[in-house]
Length: 530
Image (cartoon, rainbow, N blue to C red; front, side):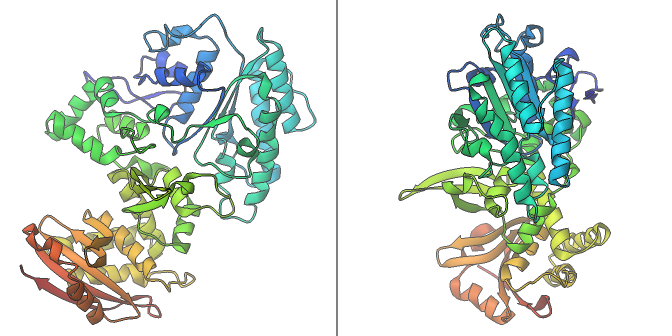
């Protein structure tokens, strides 16, 4: 893929976006954030020979695969000046079989096998080797055998990128197990040919059970939450500052802010991912690259959209994602036919690890949205999907909400919110208060209000707290109840008391939802004074 270069401002670095080729980046003089020291710890056999790491989309997995390919092929000239250059034995090279399963998204099992055959044919041409065998699994086995036989050490390297991509598009569909079983058959060859592999590296978004890449590979090292490789994907603060000083300076100059404020804004938008509880946070590398190259703070996460299966899962199991806690077992493998919502949200990058604690014999992880870009992108998708409205109407209602909040007009704000609820599709069963809470949370996040759902106080849990520069709104919801009862609960439980010394006006709002009307049926508003 050709590198796109947006580094057109004098003094800016050459920043490549939308490319996964290590060779193209290095040959083109584009910035490469050096991750080879971490790659060496995986590739030098000190930790094992077979590895799997899961990371969200757009996190540099394919670039890491490309880098490893060049490393094992012995292309030393590409590593000039990098950490691994003087630490690697360049006298040994290995043939590399690279399977980019991202090219194998298919509509059916038959289509999947055709796509896999096309991929194997492409690799056989690149490697200048014959392709033989009665089916895709046999062809993969023969390729591994032939490649290893042609090496002095009788070894080859296997790289599998996006192993789960063919499966992700079928989550929530009736044929998901058929796709899973086809992949199980294909990937079982990796186990069969394990002894011929000098090194194997597999990437994906999720770790599914009953796919033999995990159930059969006894020696596979699962490093998705290992502190030693926690920063392999993504950029640390130090890496961004060291590698993009010109672009950062240009960005600050454009917005008229100093270096600290520029970096703080970059952190707010794109940082915050943590893949091990004690690891330093990392930026989304693609979003940072696009921000610095375009000199714009935009929600680049929108470019690929929120998966339809995830939105459907959220409608069936509505939750607010501002702050949740799950046990460590939720990170383990799960069934494609019954994906766990929180696990999916974490593995796809909508939630990340904030902290961890031990509770008896259980390890609990606190998960939060990583940054503003992700939270707003997800809230946009949720509010449109949950409310069943088009983008134009959505934008109009959001404008009305912003104006109402700016003028501290709670009733006008709730009128606009009613329009969201009025459009909930009739085929969606809305019998739980949580559905309304989720849509409420998504809308308020989008209008820029600091929003917390289900906030704990010393006397219980309040449904939602919305904070603006000038005021704090404490909400309590009642499904098929009364707004009077909701307001009374706020006052009786003292949910608002912790905010009275904030220096801001505190407004108590009781809201009643009617399941039959599928909307707000009543509201009670009261301003309290310390």
